[in-house]
Length: 83
Image 1 (cartoon, rainbow, N blue to C red):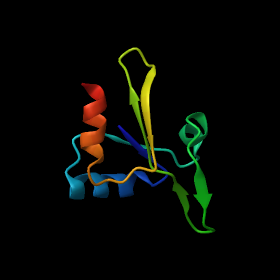
Image 2: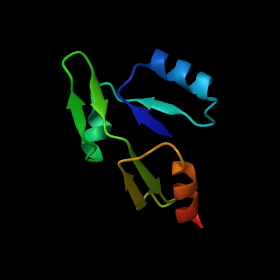
Image 3: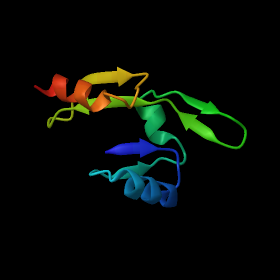
């Protein structure tokens, strides 16, 4: 799953444009950001959350955290941790 502070409409457009095979959750109030200790920058008219990926096991335990994520090559990095 992906999570961001953007609206549901923005998520739908982004998911369709990028052909994402997973759901995007809306966190307009930043409650998930606070829960997972993800930094949020307030730029007056928009809030931006840091890019962080958590690899969570079936048991609900965080197996790995990837901070300062660069989308290029990131999927391969996450998949390497899975094996």
